[in-house]
Image (tube, rainbow, N blue to C red):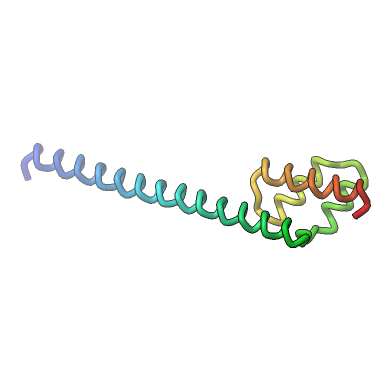
Length: 101
């Protein structure tokens, strides 16, 4: 096989892999965006109906002990939420606990 042909095949293979990885990454971002939209809609529906999201007792225990960071960590471990989402959720749970609802 001619060295130029081999070089061309290697470049074509690398390009094909790059395109495939890019397509998978774009699909993942699209799925994440769609999931976030569904979650926002579900949150609005739950708020409208007055349904409280279930709270992990470990999160409540940490909040009652004044350990917000531990509560966020426990929430993330339980739900798989991002750091920002977990912090927002823990803040909502803390305000509910403070108001006594």
